[in-house]
Image (cartoon, rainbow, N blue to C red; front, top):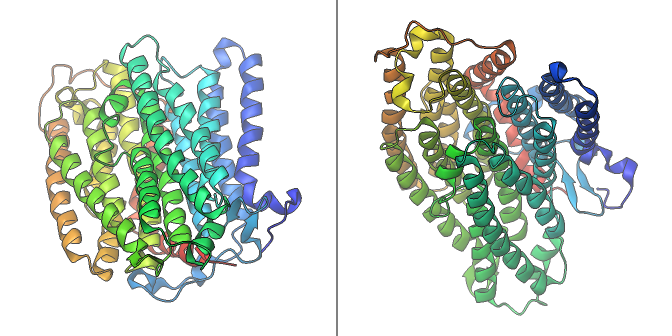
Length: 520
């Protein structure tokens, strides 16, 4: 382990962040130099650049081949190898470079790249260099918190990620819904950040250190006065703050309005990258600061946060799926679907105490497939809304005849969200429910299955509208540009592969995240 502040030694840990910083400078320069007719290239440079950073990150620091991980790890075995010599603490112990950080950084980079390409031909975003710059900065913040092991880095990374999102939500000044959504997001986000910061400050007050492992050691030591109530208050405040970031009920109030009012590429980026980064941090935080066996004043702290997370999971699944049934706007429907998806993912968090290894891998795999799935669904909405000016589900009638490719890709995305094989969502949900069963939470796995059946209804309703219903403009084809076509193609391919041939390699990669959490 290298815990010293040596910049060269720290490069493996911050390679994506360095790459994003360089890319941001390049975009800023191109924004000043390109003529109006060439400004569409900003999207291509951003998208290709972020994909390139993700690929380079994997090639340079993935010394353990995927095939070395046990294929039967799906049902839980001993921990596979992790990142070898490069794994450890860097930047004075503020960032940890490990498999968990790696897989989440890759999905954040992919989410940002697909968002940039998706926005290339939109009227409000396509030629705005500042939009791509803000997406890069927000992705940089997400990458920082994916490996954060210090309270200062946790908060700085969160704010670096979320403050740009407030700007992006209000980006379209010509649509009154956009500034309104940005203001709502800013107000709710500021309030949630204050709650989270207060919880973090309480932990610092107890331990006198901002290091996550240092806080865990102090809480386990005799020096701590064993004040369970204060720790429980701090833990509750922190989970409330994270609940907002992942749009879990009952902290979801901002989600439908922001999803509907923000420009659709922004909604797509918001729904995947910030959620993935927040779950990565939540995993690391709960397991590092409040590990299994931590008992304070006779209260088992991990049991407390597991019960709290279980309640959030149940409320999110119930509210998200039931309210989604009544939605008529496709973006609001996907917003409530996102709340329900947060509930499914929280099942994995709740199962951490009973089946930690399977849970960490299941959450990582689920968020990986969710990134491509949600991007795919929103990419279709971008194309349709740009062509028709409508976001109503009823106006999707006859889409299969106007654009068979759009209807097919939308169907793939919706079936994946519903958990229907062979789309990736099936195995994503399977792994989460498997973790719950291993942890003895059979009842919440059953509830998750029942809620997935409810969700299937409103997803299939959209499919029925596209293929069965007839619209007034069925004779008017919807054009798909080459750039957005790449987004649809890559996302569709990823969703199908993650549900078929790539299940075992990606899950084995995700399995490396658990042992790396406790590396020395």
